[in-house]
Every structure is written in C-alpha cells, then in structure tokens.
Length: 94
Image (cartoon, rainbow, N blue to C red; front, side):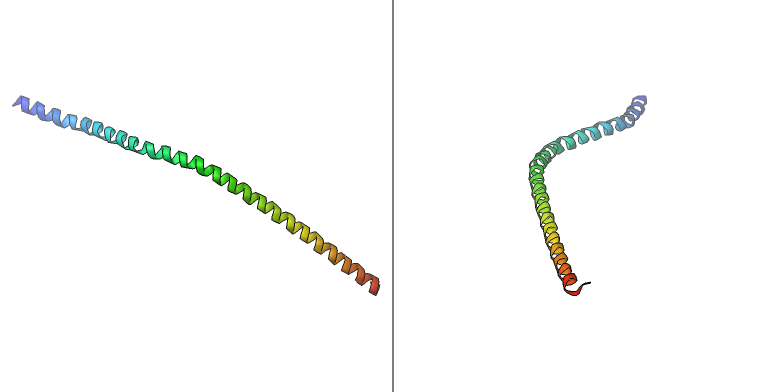
C-alpha cells in the first residue's frame, strides 16, 4: 500500500516537470520551424530595400526637377508681370 501511495505522489509530483519538459520541447520545435521563414524574410528585405532605395532616389530626382521647373515658371511669370507693370506705368504715368 505504501508503494502505491508513493507511486501516486511521485506521479503527480513529476507531472509538472513532465509538462515543463513537453512545453519546452514544443517551444523549441516552433522556433526551429520559424527560422527558415525569418531567413527568407531577411533575404526578401535585403533585395526589396535596394529596389526601394532606387525608387526613392528616382522620386527625389523627379521632385527636384518639378521644383526647379516650378521655380523657373514662377520667375518667368514674375518677369512678365513686372514688364506689364512697367509698361502701364510708362503709358499712364502712375
């Protein structure tokens, strides 16, 4: 009878340890499965970063060109307005 009681006590006492061991094994297995996806994701990030940088540089260049064109257009309009104002002043004396 004492052996049965001791066996049950050991069984219930070790069930927590067994659960911990199984939980750790499952955690390790999940991490092992995640590794290829993490590596693949890193490779995709490296490749796509190059594309993103090239795209960003092209966008920046286009923005600079648009800004320069707008500045040139503003200057041309400003010169035209100044000429018209000068002609008006010359003609009317105001």
